Structure formats: C-alpha cells, structure tokens
Image (tube, rainbow, N blue to C red; front, top):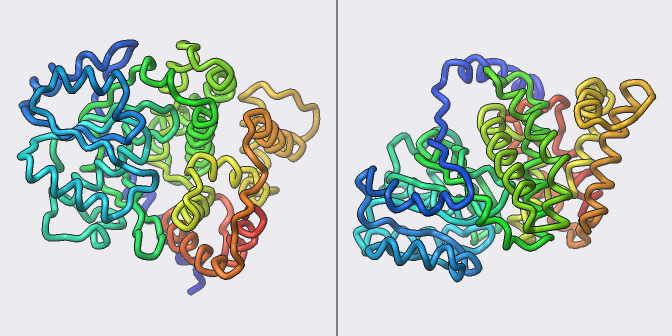
Length: 395
C-alpha cells in the first residue's frame, strides 16, 4: 500500500473519530487587567501553591512581580528557553515536586506554555519519559490545574491540546497531543502584549495566521464551527496584525489579535495544522529558528505547492480579506499568496533562512514527513522528496 493511500485511509477513519471525540476548551477570562483576577481564580479551584512557569524576559516584568506578591506561596520558574528541551522540563518537574506545588500558571508565549504542559504530562505520568508520551493520546490522566496567560498573540497554546518539545540530544522537535493538556482557564489580557517587540509581534501573528490557514484547508477534520473560526481568525489577523506591528500600544489591535489567536488555536486543535508546521518544526529543532518566523517564511511555498488543487479555497480567502483581483480563481489564489509575501516584507520577515546545511536535508525531510503523514489532512499529499525540495528552497 502506498504512503499516500495509507494516509488518506487513516485520515478518513480519524475524521469519523474526530466527530465523536470530546473537544475540550478552557474557560476564558478576558479584558484589560483580567490578570488581576488570577489569584481568586486559583483560590476558587483549590490551588494554594502554584508553580509560575515563564521565561527570563516575562519573568522580570511588572505583571509577574505583581502576581508573585499576590501569590505569596507560589514558586517561580523563569528560565524557559525557546524550543524547550527535555532536560529543562525534567528540572521543572523536579522543582514542582520539591516545592509541593499543586497547580500550574504558564505566562508568556508558546515555549513557556509548551514547557508547562509537558511538565504537567510528566507529573501526571511520573513513570513515563517525555519520549514515550510523544504522539497522540499517550498521557490519558489529568494534569495539575492549569491556567494559561498568553503575552503574545500567535501560538494559541492557551487553548490547544499539544505541547511541542525538543530532544536536546539530537535537535528534534516533537509534539505531545492529548486533550488533558488543554488549560483549565485562559486569561486573555491585552495589556500583557503591549511590551512585545515589533519583530515578535510579526512572528507570532504570522504563526496565528498559519494556524488559521492550515486549519481552514484541512476540510475532512472540521466539526461544528471550526471552519468559521479559522476564517474569522484569518480576517482579523489581516485587519489588525499590521496595526499591532506598527504601534505596540494599539490596544484595540492587540485585543483583536489575542481573540484571533485563540480562535485559530481552537480551529487547529480540531482540524490540525499541516506541512508548514511540519517543516517549521525541523528548522526550529535543528537551527532554533523562531517558530512563527519559520512558519511565515515557509507558508507561501507550501501554498504554492497546493496549486492548482487549492485554487478555489485560496480564491475564497482572497475574497474574504477583501483583496481586489479581477481574474479567475487561479489568479485570485496567486494574489492571496503574493499578499502573504508582501505582508512578510512589510514586517521585515526575510524570504529565506540561509542556514541550511546539505547534510541535514534528508534528516529534516524525514522528520517532517513523519510528523505530517498520516495525521495531517493536507489538501495535497507531499512526499519526502517534495518536503526536501521546500526545505532547500527556504533554507
């Protein structure tokens, strides 16, 4: 049986299972200053000594200092690095247990939340390594009470069931996917995003846009309103990302981006992502390319690989964002892709990475293929050779 046929059969079966699975969502607490409600939210849920998980930049922020003063018994871990490695997560587990913590508060971007989720998985499954928890539905036990507080508008980690970690021995990124990893509460406070530098605003915003586009295109997995949520997120990002990039204190744009990121997160949690993410993870694991940046650079090339199969879907997206194009559906699809490239250029995102070593292409293509096939219902099936072609093109 060919790899393509096997993948399509797997996806057909999983699409039926997907309709029947429970899809968890966090309770959302939103609005400017909503982080101030966090101590009471924890108390209401019986959490007395949470572990606050964040990175060095956010750990020094006024918001975290104020929160720690309000949570006198909390324990702070403020050392999360991008692409959190297994060794660091094991140290987090050790500190959580040593300090008798009873809940998790993750503050920051995707890396901070991924690290916190992976820590939670290890706490729930103390006798299983992270390597053995990698994949789908391997945790299957409730993790400690978990509150996610994003300071970026992009990853959607505050509402997803996945944690992406890095095997620091070989530089490979992989995901742990399980409904138990979905946070109990998501706090969406736009005030926390205003200090995000312009370049990270661009990268994380393009990450959210990639989530929305890939989820939108993965039609077989859609349930209820996930397609509409992906489309809503996409339109909001096209409308507000440039504003947030140009003026970090534009709170309306920041709030709209937080909501868009959340909606895209819900959509791709159900519908999955695609080859853009599969390739981006290989560049992140091998070369520590920031994840949103990787997605932004790779996205146009993958969409070009979907043509002409996806002419109609991309033409519909062209119309949805109000892009003027008088041509046929193929011309509209091309116009949509060119607009993505223009967005990247306007926000200082390069066309390629210039880091790739030829010796790593085969390995990276293998990793990307293993991540994407058979799970992701991408509209066009990419072989390992096609993935290697794109890796070389953007590398």
